[in-house]
Amino acid sequence: MNHDKIMVIDYGSQYTQLITRRIRELNVYSEIYSYEVTKSDIQEYNPKAIILSGGPSSVYDENAFPLSEDVLKSGLPILGICYGLQLLVHNLGGKISSKDRGEYGPSKVSFKTDNDIFQGLNSESNVWMSHGDEVEFSGEKWNVLAKSENGIIAGLSHTDKPFYGVQFHPEVVHTHEGLKILSNFIFKISDCKPTWTSKNFIDDTINKIRSQVGEDKEVVSGLSGGVDSSVMATLMHKAIGSRSNCIFVDHGLLRKNEAEEVMGSLKDGLQLNIIKVNAKNEFLNRLKSVTDPEKKRKIIGAQFIETFEDSTKKLSDISFLAQGTLYPDVIESGGSKLGPAATIKSHHNVGGLPEDLDFELIEPLRDLFKDEVREIGKELGLPNFVLNRHPFPGPGLAVRIIGEITESRINILQEADDIFIQTLKDKNEYDNIWQAFAVLIPIKTVGVMGDSRTYENLIGLRAVTSKDGMTADWYKMPPEILEICSNRIINEINGVNRVVYDVTSKPPGTIEWE
Image 1 (tube, rainbow, N blue to C red):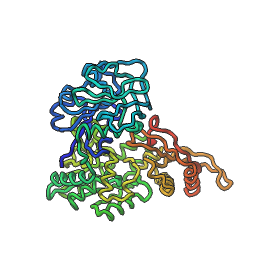
Image 2: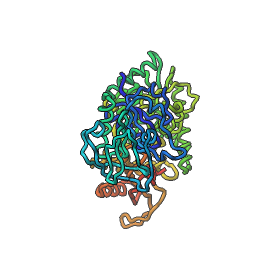
Image 3: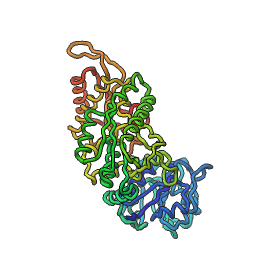
Image 4: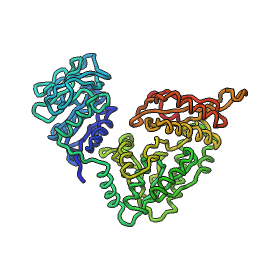
């Protein structure tokens, strides 16, 4: 099925992916392209409209990203956001200047609502600003449709062309009516139809997989039990049935009972063809006495490759390798329809599969964001255990055990993590959190337990909220939950006498500790 599409041109904004996600929330397909987009790129993609993102540059900077003449001459509706607005004005006779009075953060804007772009909005509304330059003179061909409380031009429309611009960021939730503005541009101005749905994606993808694989060839994929690989494996199974083979490597660094839950829900529940490989001893032997986090990652990656390769050799007639690569993975690795071709090595979440694996690559989720994957999984009937599972690092608990990896330290962390997660679920907090986990910190502390002095391990608890993992805020955990977790961990786990809670956001910290 053909869908109406919006092209988003990236000028280096931190919000570019968010623009694309907001468009897709409106059931219209969208992709990100480089500012170097050409006429042939536009013709091949065949969008209904183009959106120019914000960016950190000034239009007068020597190395500022330019606006392509091919975009201006495309004849398509164009919406410029922040730097995108300034580019439009700059290229069409206006003047951009810096007056040392930039706007950053929340601001109030007054709108003229008798036009297509701002139709249905309140005459005054809160928006999110992030700019140092401003439109000093728009030129004779622009209508001013909005101004900020500081008197700065915040919205424009061209008199002759379907060009529009906003100085604020409608894609950010802090812009109260931002989605309405995007909706007006997409549907009223660009005449898009909202046909990009989960069901349509599933039907289209299954047909594509069948066409690519053919009627007799087989596929192998790595299965972690996370939502990405689970949705990918389920799509493959629906497309080609038993010719889709999943390899699930239990490296001994999973959460408590996780291997059993994965096999129960996916193999027994959804009838996926899963081969479980028990490789705990191999991984722990190679990790013995290793404390450096980067060395841990490299060792785990190398051992995973070896285990995966050995397992594939036991299968016959494998022609394809399926991976759960997502759209943010493609963007962040420098790949897109305009960038370098995807490689197996670039996208594997543990450490890279060797390029000499003689398989053709299939990435059925390559065009999706994480929230879209969850919607697809829900439509496919995956259990909540899989759909709502917090992100889990490829190296597993190895990057949550600071210092040396031993079986006893794994057991301590598994138990502490299980208490934390189960408490969050019992108190209905789990689904409010992007990621929550426990960390075993290589510090021993003095305590008193049963009138005796103790000198035992320290457990750190970490919980954050996020939309995409790029930034994150520490979760304001109710104190009573922390109290329950602390008491249980200390009383139920031998070798722990203190629990702390991490209140660091990202940035400056990272989500994981290693």
